[in-house]
Length: 107
Image 1 (cartoon, rainbow, N blue to C red):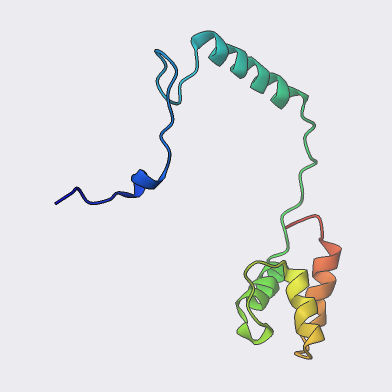
Image 2 (tube, rainbow, N blue to C red):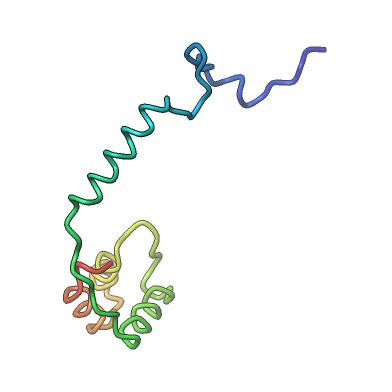
């Protein structure tokens, strides 16, 4: 009998360059990359710190997320879910939509 097939048999093999181990950079390339990353981090403007969210608002959003009455919540945003529930006549709570529109920049 032949050998059993493996999952890796269906994928092409990648050849490695001479003398290079996978996942490692040359020393001079590594130092160059570190310098570039440091420069990018230094040049990146920092976002202003946001105040911590209101615990009552977070609790209200958590209850909305966990309530199956308004349909599944995977793959869509909270606002899309609220609008879908409204279109289906499920009457989702209005304060949820107001909070989502007010804090659009905060996921």
